[in-house]
Length: 120
Image (cartoon, rainbow, N blue to C red; front, side, top):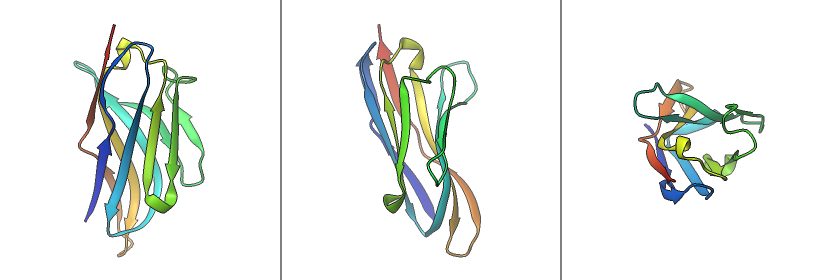
């Protein structure tokens, strides 16, 4: 069984910064792509950023230049550094990972979500 546990959300003023972390644990053989998604009230969950196992990154246009995704493969952990936060960044942020367990079974796991609130 594999779990993704997020941390680092909270309340911050516009222009401030937050760093989210997400650690995968359990019977993990290999973690491929990892990413962050967010959901705001009345909207579907949307991609924020992804990172491959080799470090290639992809960002939503709305966060380019402000957010940075990174990972520590040895710890099966992905991070999201969020700078110059805007009120429209408010939402619940979910971590996602594509991984294989020791039985070589593929899973796409999601974390429980961490809330980010950016005040004006």
